[in-house]
Every structure is written in C-alpha cells, then in structure tokens.
Image 1 (tube, rainbow, N blue to C red):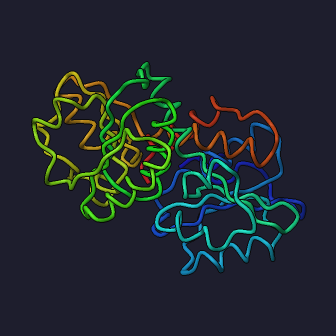
Image 2 (spheres, helix red, strand yellow):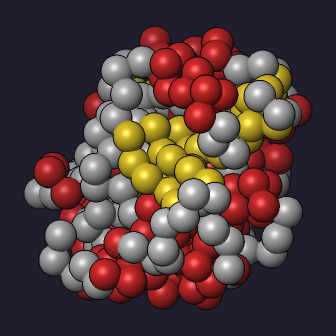
Length: 290
C-alpha cells in the first residue's frame, strides 16, 4: 500500500485520534478512507483500527484520551448502546449505532449505515420507493438498512439463519411500518425471489477470509434483480460476480462504505466530506495487494 495512504500526514503533538472498533477489523478500509479525507481537508488527525475485547473499555478510552470520534462495526453495533451518554433520534429509532461522537466527554451515538446504503443504491440508479427488498442477515447493519428502506417506502423481507432473531428484528421494525416480515434463509426459494426487486447481503459471508462462499443459491438470481453486497473486501464478492454473470444490476459495498463514511466525517468535523478523495483512496487500496 502506498506510504501516502498509510501515513497521510506528519503526526504532531496536536494530532487528534479517531478509530474504528470491531472484531475482526484488520481488513477494514475505513482508516484508508478517513485518513485520505483528513489529508484532503488539511485536518491534523489520524484514524486507526482497534479490536478491543470490550466495547465499554473502548468507549471509556475515547473519554480518557479525548478522541473526538470513532466508528463501530461487527460485533459491537448493538452492544455499544449500553455504553453511551446520549443517542441521536435516528440511531435510537434504528436501535443500532455505527458512529460515536465525543462532545466534551459525553459520547453520543449515531447511525450512518442506512443512509449510506440508500445513497449507494440511489447513486447507482436504483428506484427504492415501492421496491421489494430482501435483506439477508439480522445484525446492526441489517437493522439500519431496513429502517432506511422502509422510510423510503420500500417493503422489506428479513432473512436470517436464526428465524427467531429475524422475527425479532421484523417485530421491532413493524413499530414504524407494516411492510416488513421475516423468514429463515432456507425458505428463500423461486416463488419468493419472483417478488423481490433488491437483494442486499448484510452478513460477513463472502468477506476476504470467506471469499468462496455466497449467502444464497446463485440460481435464484435473475436479470431483473439488483444485488447489493455490503461486503467490500474483496471489491467484487462471489455474490456480485455471480449476479453479474446472470446480468443482474450490482451495487458494491465500497459505495456504502464511502457514503456512510462521508456522513461520519461531516458529523465529526462540521465540514463537507471530500467524497471523491475518499473513493480514490479506497479504490487504490483495493487494487493494492494487502
């Protein structure tokens, strides 16, 4: 990886520290993306990746070290709720947090995942209103994306390995919309897929260490579908590769990564995010052997 991406600017005694907390997180391109944004905007800050055993300890460290902000990813997006001093209305409605903002020692939770996913779809030319969306997975990202899709008047079908967890998420979402239901992943078949417009994988299946796997049977994917995989390492997952072979429209996880990251940057800094620089940095990192 180019030195300019690893060390985007000189570290000084005034450099502010940002981070992403998750397990695993060493694959994350958030440091590449946010360090490029700081460099482009002339901000004396550095963004690193940490794998804490406890999200509470990580949040406490933000207070102790005066860290202005952090990202939260798998498996902490729900557990972090118990560690916050405050939460904004959007994240509270979703019930999941992926962004932390330190306001004078008070840690406030936000969620940019759903809005980032919606923007990725819209920028790719996908119509959301009235669409039928199959979300594979029932974790924090699934929760945020489903909430945002419902807010844009789509219908949502949650598919999980655990039907109990999928039903619990659907039950939470039903407080705001009746256009949601749940099934087990084994129940996904041709009859269901004939009614689906957008397929979204929110599970880690297909991630670099699991790159040969796919969350649904490939023969269920048709040209009429839009297939969106929020996994971004590798850039083209097997799911997206198989979808392309079947002439389906594809949306890459990298797009969601950048758009949700841009919202994080704007929240932390109050500045407009340099989205093009963020895309360039992530694209360069994905082209470079890691």
